Length: 97
Image (cartoon, rainbow, N blue to C red; front, side):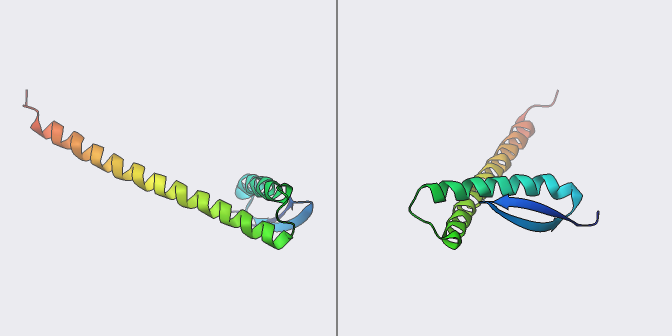
């Protein structure tokens, strides 16, 4: 594993210095860009102006997305398991040649 190094990200005109491994730098930059976009949408919506509230609302929105993706993944994994079981059952019922 590589040594962590400082990376500067910019979110809503503020710079934050974060330590991360060089191989994680791209993911960190993409995450910061996503967060910046999310926070801008909330701020530009005009209902919320406090930076803390914008950050909390953004975190809640992103957490909801994560939960939905986890649920979709679990449903897909359950479907995959059922399909594998059905395929095994079909193979077992085939007459041997």
